[in-house]
Length: 254
Ligand code: 13P
Image 1 (cartoon, helix red, strand yellow):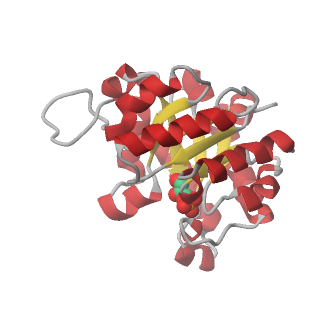
Image 2: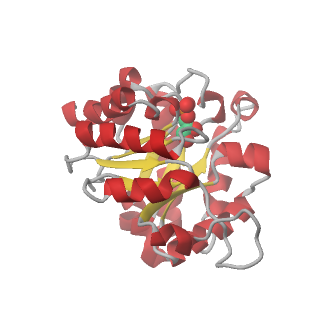
């Protein structure tokens, strides 16, 4: 089963709309025309409209960092799937550990968002990963398995091809501590097993599982060479074209 690599930049709460435009132009110039690796940028909501016009002339796909599970109505501050589709957003990051940690998101509340995303033809990048405490207590696989099962409850089999998972060990996010290649592969292979259980051999094997957590050009090649690591969800290193494109190039040169 060959899965196309996906390198996605999660800009988090960084960049104004004009800064975002500059960065997208730079990324476009560096890696925006190649089609070997799928490249996605996820700026804040306030930059999506400007970004949408810029990526139109490139192979870069636009992503959002969150989404409401509701279709419309009295939900102050929220953004719907339809609003994202209207700006040609393709991917949406859901259940990022920062949203779980600071905004009380749970497997159940993220599940509602994942289902709303696929119903609206958005591709969810569903994030999972254990905390340092959980890893040290030997609970990593157990925690990640329930995140996968509960977050993907009732996920429609017909949409499995649109599903992306991102394994982001919480202790590796923004800390400079990366999982070793072997640690990442161990968890990715286990996630793959759960996906096969849920959706069957072929569909389970088609889902891309990204690694996230201090990925940078220097460590990307080793992580991305693992059989079940199908790309990266990049935070800090996605904020400069040099580092982000360097990761894409690490795949192209492999
Ligand atoms: P860093 O690459 O900054 O560790 O962040 C990873 C992340 O949270 C991507 O979603």
